[in-house]
Length: 314
Image (tube, rainbow, N blue to C red; front, side, top):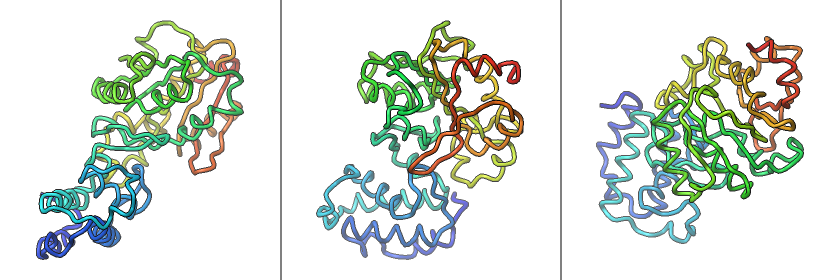
């Protein structure tokens, strides 16, 4: 059934784990040790084994991530232990990200529902949203477009940061939009965040936005093939974008100006494919943004700049 970490799984199966471990703290420490002994990759909301162990255990027993540590000494029931052990088997054996196992991911300090219909939120654009795009936009936006919305986390975070704004959340995938709708309802922003099915700009109304934010698929073919197993649980439609990772980004660059107000701005993430973008368009003045908490490959361009260099992207 499972392909990965089979020796560790055999060892766990041979031990009376449920009898040996009593408390939440016991279970976290045990998982931490086995995760450290494994070949797991951390990059889907958590970057280390301890944080993943903590998230897995607390989600399994329906406790919030900020539960007082005094409760860590609480004893687990037999049912709870078995539920946690089963999740550990799934994480080790399939290398499925914890976010999918628990249907929970965090973005901009808020919790979102996720499953394998969408990628796990992890964009550094979250830092820009928290700061209100300070130093990037001149005026508070009232109309925002989140292109390639996925789980809807960027659209919803923008709506929460700018309470007077309306946000259109666009995606080609109907499955992704179903997940976005779940999050829109959970965050109670249905009156301001509107999911739209469209292949980029093809099927959306000819509207004008103050801000277009997009985290499109941008993984190039070589990187897509080399990615750790955890990434292969995510929808490929939301990751790959041609040989250089820029097929979708170029379409956005060519059309975005038509949907921006005169002082409008595009903020776009291309990750490691920034190398290809710089090589192919050396004359374009991409404003590469810096982050305090890690992240790269996010740029901004004004409407004026997009119009000036549009001929290069077509």
